[in-house]
Image (cartoon, rainbow, N blue to C red):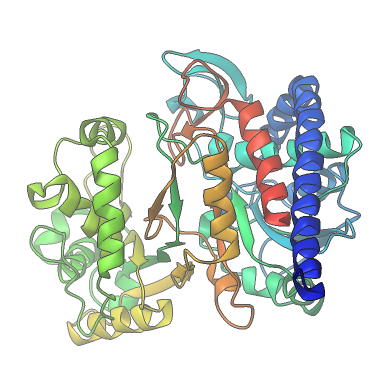
Length: 499
């Protein structure tokens, strides 16, 4: 006999199936209309990106402030955020914006509106003009500082919001945007932005935070990063004044026979930080990195079977990995090891010809990458103690920015939605332990928020921090999406996050 309980259970299942089918049908209709709108708005969206690249903000040069923050706030308001506020910090201002769609779920966004410095003489086209040029084997690309890092992907995300609204569709999730203007100098004041009461309260409602990105390699491979290395940016300054030896001003080089050199003093100090080949950190009592787990090693092994080593070497213009390591071991080292890197050495005369002086001052610009479970404060303290112990306590250690590494679980809803969205686009993404680069995700993944955080977005670009930085607008490579494809990936991701 068919019981009432069984009848109602069967009815419930049918209702759930009906609701899910209806939801999927509505989403498909929405996506079709939005895709049409993306195509219609292509030229407008690309022009918006070009204009944004023209609005330069460079924290290291104190260039483009507060204009960059005001521009970012306007971009947010134009894209549908009901409020976008410029928030001052002890450094450069940030932007806090919210978009309330009345949706059940809320997602956080992290943007940066600043870019790296550039020398126009090194570029084939002016870095602020954002010209569209043909690039062999790729198609039409936009060339400019910030093209891929990070204005291109961010502009594609904003274009997604314009298209959703233009198609007359309801935003599937609510949004909370935090944009900063100091990412390229190590985000020294982002805590002041994120931990403001109104910003923190909004972020606490979020299921996670992501940064728009361009994740497709030249061969179409997509990796989903489960974190990023931390970083410390600093200057080591050796001067005759602080040392008490050497000159207090530049003097004739002939006097080196009787006067100490602050430049050599700095070189000798730098030499104590690393092994003879420069590849192993030798700082006394330096924090120890957390070793790779078996799961992380398996991720690396899988990616190394897909990524082409020769192509990667060509991309980086290198012929060998450290110690001539095999491909997989080189990537294990990339993911597991902290670094001490010399970004630049500055001292004395560097112009044409010679100038026989004994410089009174020399500076080394250093970045130090950190992996779990290292902390920036511990690494900095160890460096200072090491220099003092080795007889270099006079050398100034000026930290300009930095933060701890981040980690996010592959089981988080944010990451699962990324994987599902890529799969729906016909891409089988690969999980990757962490980005070897850095971004200040620690303010989201750490206390008090403890949110999942990551990067997402189709499309491709390259040349971040280098001349001729580019982002693909119209792709001739069938494995890589152009600008409109990147825009649609963000639309689809928002709908996936809403499920």
